[in-house]
Image 1 (cartoon, rainbow, N blue to C red):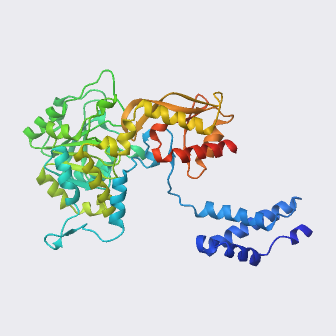
Image 2: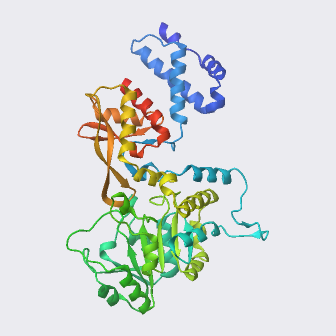
Length: 454
């Protein structure tokens, strides 16, 4: 009982907290909750026979609880996993230019829907349309909030209560359990499946076309592969069939890319430009994967079709805001300049040389001051990720740590500030420089050092 009487009163704790400025920083109710919780924990320890904690210890425990409870749930992490486009970690990091452009537009008013030359209302869609057309060879382009929205808008506009013909080998499921047939159903289009999982021919599409057919659709298998006894028509063949029979050819590229991935030792990913040349009427793809920009869905194709999409009431529910458009415009201009490998983090990571990766991994090892038994730089593989280039990896050189309990160690890394996401291979903790931003090197070393101390 004597120790219980030593527990500080709430008013004394509040006076100390006020002196530290905690109420202004965290808010009164969170502060009261944290102080009560800390006192209750101290009381429980006293009842178990432990001495009464000092005032400073009770306050420190409350402070840690406040920081934990008021910490943003969305915050930066260091991605040392080796997955370049990590869906769970926000996909593509943005360029410094894009971040600056987004900040400039966010700080005040903008020309979002204002034509400064005419002094009257304009359209938010002009900011990306011309760039998309120039970069892809299409007549026009449109931006919505992601690629699933792009597919939904296309089908709702051109195929509601009508049929869309699609190969069974392309009935894909994207991240989060969203399936192409479900998206089509929500749009009001009727799916007509043709061919088999592994082999579909032009004649299968042609046999399925009726007076109710609105479009033939192609869905790129960007997150899995079909190998072995397979066949599917070239896009040029389907374009010829679609135009001869008076229906649209819609091409869902999924991730989508504007540059050839084969130059980096990866398999060739079809470019948007090539799909337009092949005859697709409309092509849709993502903005936050291989393109390297903010989350968005792009639709490019024939001008009259894009104009019809702009008149759709559904578009208002799918439109992007000024901040996203600013990031998109800046990112697309880098493609115009032809220097994306220097400026866009996704392509900088993919194209990073083994020499640079090796140098950074060795620098981490030296700064940690660990011996060869505890740390080594070894060959490993990085992954593109983000539902792109399935099965394809890039050679890398990673820092590998030998620790007593790898699972507990990577958990400590995740629980640090900022969190560090690593992977475990063959009971070693693997830290891949390919996906760590250059400015994060110092913080990564400090976080690993802290986790080793614990």
